[in-house]
Structure formats: structure tokens, C-alpha cells
Amino acid sequence: QITLKESGPTLVKPTQTLTLTCTFSGFSLSTSGVGVGWIRQPPGKALEWLALIYWDDDKRYSPSLKSRLTITKDTSKNQVVLTMTNMDPVDTATYYCAHFEFSTSCSFDYWGQGTLVTVSS
Amino acid sequence: EIVLTQSPGTLSLSPGERATLSCRASQSVSSFYLAWYQQKPGQAPRLLIYGASSRATGIPDRFSGSGSGTDFTLTISRLEPEDFAVYYCQQYGSSPPITFGQGTRLEIK
Image 1 (cartoon, rainbow over the protein chains, first blue to last red):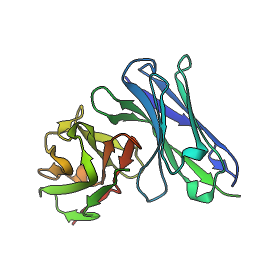
Image 2 (cartoon, one colour; image 1 turned 45 degrees about the horizontal axis):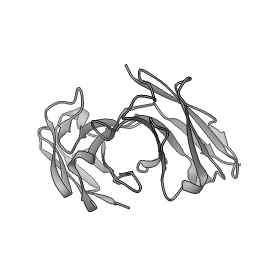
Image 3 (tube, each protein chain N blue to C red; image 1 turned 90 degrees about the vertical axis):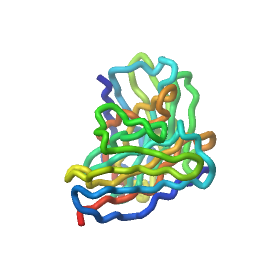
């Protein structure tokens, strides 16, 4: 059974760096064809993909946010970490991590519950 | 960058009716790389369809996907009360690898 859970601060100040951790179980991020992605959703708005890390440590970022994002993985801990620098109130959103199946579906087939991050002074 | 445009923005239907949701891509998308998600208030999205037409595990057969190239469709044959939600399409490509549509809200008429 695959599960994912996001953790991190619920409130950050403008200009600060956000660090979110996705802790997962039921799969290994060293297995070929597997990835973990981050997606966010501002209140009442659409989903926005942020970053994706593959089993082979290849990394992809949203072009509009690339300069502010870093995604890393710790296979031994079953964790993926996303950092986003220079936070702004427009970054207020629910942040999701999700399991990405590259070899069969190229889609996010398992999602965490999400964590709401508010950016405010 | 491939842009996905979903229509309509809001669809108002009654239970038992048929729903047809559209997702149009700005460039051709391989059918293998097109997925649909359902999201209910306060919940994470749920994968419904991958590969344009394959139902994910546990998804009822009233949900079906079709299309190719730049035009894709999600059809719900007979709406159940629990189907009223927001639906997103998503594509996997080269650069950037992932984009989502802006969503279609399916509401009870």
C-alpha cells in the first residue's frame, strides 16, 4: 500500500525559504520508472505542477519557478524534500506530494493529503 | 510549453445525465501521456484515467476517456451524486514534463 505525507511549516514570512518534506511508504524511489512530484493549489484555484524527481535522480522543474525550487531525495529515509526560496503571499497554497508512475501511466497515481502553507508577515 | 485548455469551465447537470468534459492541448500530446483527475472539496486529487482511456484501479466503468492528438474527452455516462467535483486533465511531455488544465467544475443542476 502506497502512502505519502507532507510535512513542514504552516506559516512562513515573506522572503523566507520554505522546506517541505514528503515521507512515503509502499515503494522505493530507487525502483526504475518511479518518481515523486510536488504540486500546489492556491485556495480556490487550479493545480500547478512544481517539480519532479525520478528514480535515477534526474530532476525537472516548472519553468516559471525553476530559479526558486530545489528537489532532493533521500532513498534510505523514503523522503523527498522540496525547498522554495523567497516566499511571497502569492505562494500561499496547499502543497501536495504524489507518486509518479513513469513506466506505465505517466501520471500521479497516489497523493498525499496536502499541507496548507500560508505566507504572511 | 504545452498548454491544456479545459471546457466548459463549469458544467451544470442532473444525476443520471451524461457529462462530457473537454481537454484541448496547444500541441499534439501522445495518448499515452494524457491523464484525468477528480478532486472533491478538501481532498487531494484522485487519478481517474491514464493513457487517455485506461481507467485507474477502482474507478467505475461509467468513467471513460477518449481522444488523441490535441483533443481529449472525459465522459461520465450516468452521473451519480458523488461525481459532482472538479476535474483536471494533465499531460506529460518534454519541457516542462507536466502541465495541468485549469479544471472543469461539474455541479448539480
